View 1 (cartoon, rainbow, N blue to C red):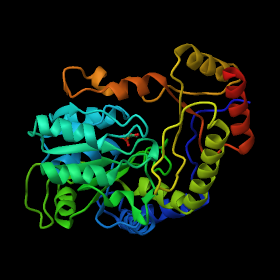
View 2 (view 1 turned 90 degrees about the horizontal axis):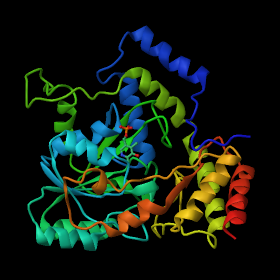
View 3 (view 1 turned 180 degrees about the horizontal axis):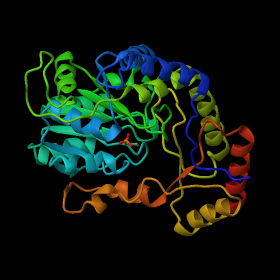
Length: 360
Ligand SMILES: *Cc1c(COP(=O)(O)O)cnc(C)c1O
């Protein structure tokens, strides 16, 4: 039996058809239609946030957030999916890298403070909650206040995550989500930005509709980044079952971690955060052992991926780096194991026992 790394959620066709029929009957296919409004409202309620703006993908979410907050230069993490950096570079944002914490794999506030003390010219900080594990949001907040920087969190992995009783999306000036098919919750392609301030939300809403103001006059030039009604229908359909999805993923994640805690190194999770089971990263420093595990899994039809590698400061080496030693070593040894809603406990146990027998 083959076990894929990931498998997208499948929307229930009966529910989906009900929504799509509403769209066809109304003839309102995009531009902030009724399903767009309903999905916005339901997501704000479910996530416990305000000022949520749906957009057409998680990459544009980062770009529009930067534009709305007037960020023209940024320090970012080298350890993330490529879009965290490429979205900035595509927009002509001057981008520099500062190292991650070796335990959490997230942007390190101490390294960030050092970089900003050396060079105070950046407008903002762009940090990722890697694998859904929240950054040290209090530490980063202190550094941002000290140096007067705006903060954007790439929360593409952090759907439904809280720190204490507060949504992780409440931290920073804006947080971005991706609703790509491979994510915990999806709209096929899609995303959202959650703004701290209403005025930034209003500005971004104008920017994603070509820069057209609510009265119809033209403002600052914008882009088209709207989420359409068919995709909102997928989102509304999948949102019905999302609690069950997250709790199943969480239980698989906890089982994996428990089985592997004495076998491989695991990233340290934020002590006050809940778990969404977005990814299952393990770390094996020794390259030979790492390859042995990947091969042994592949032989049984089990997909795994060295993810995220390379460290992004190496891929975009014309950009300034303030030293990314930890990111290089983590990117060199990290592997993601299969984790998705359509997997069961037996699959996890099969994978963990294979890993154990290959590492003992
Ligand atoms: C998926 C992802 C993105 C990009 O989102 P898209 O919706 O695919 O554009 C950005 N950042 C991170 C960390 C991601 O995992």
